[in-house]
Length: 318
Image (cartoon, helix red, strand yellow):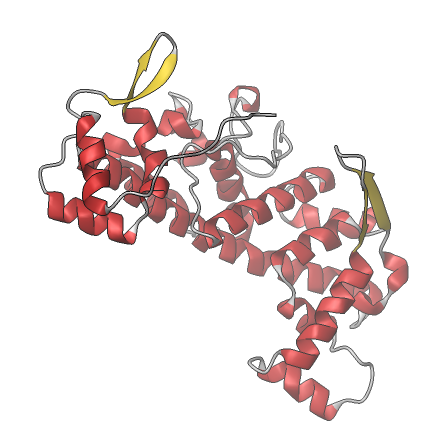
């Protein structure tokens, strides 16, 4: 265990600027930089300073490379924010399609209230690194959530309408119930359907094997949460790594998945592009991404996000 005590004092905006100046960052407009720091914390911005700091003896120093300005740092932050919004918008489109397929395919097989059928779900248990056993009971989890929504959700008119008109079943049909579930519930449902055939049809609609589809859902939920909490996506190593899709017979995919870092953002962007070929074939995601990268070309540093040097040659991006 470390025994060092944290003793750094808080700094005023002017002191933060002076500190950056002492480390070699060029700041021509101090009032503008101070205004930025009053809206975006120094600590949050510090992550976007990393590519501009010097290395000495294989160690990253606090000093900046000569010629680096405040605009380099701030523009990189703005690029990441716009990238995050683009990804979040695309995930929303995918989420709606995923909800629709879950509702449609399971309703067709099990009826309107399949979410109330405990027999179609399995209970999973796994041991964490700390030795604690965690049990995932998706049936009870989604029922607890539906009950809470029925009791407290006054914003959704269809929920109140069902509660006022129908005495039973207690829960609304799946096409209502699933609409009030969170994205992580969708991922849990797909991962915990007892019959493999139940998930095969949903995954096939998106052009994926079921195991890869469930893995990708888990990663999408992870990235969705990062985006929703305004956290950094640029230069992030993902804690939840998506499964590798080796090839696709039905959709355009990357030519050599073995060379793509799955823990980096580029692979995730490829995933989104792949899924949108089914969920929204005329999506502007690809064009908007290329435009954004070109607009912030001086600071975007695609390599920090796992982009291979020849990524533009991929049919996936043409």
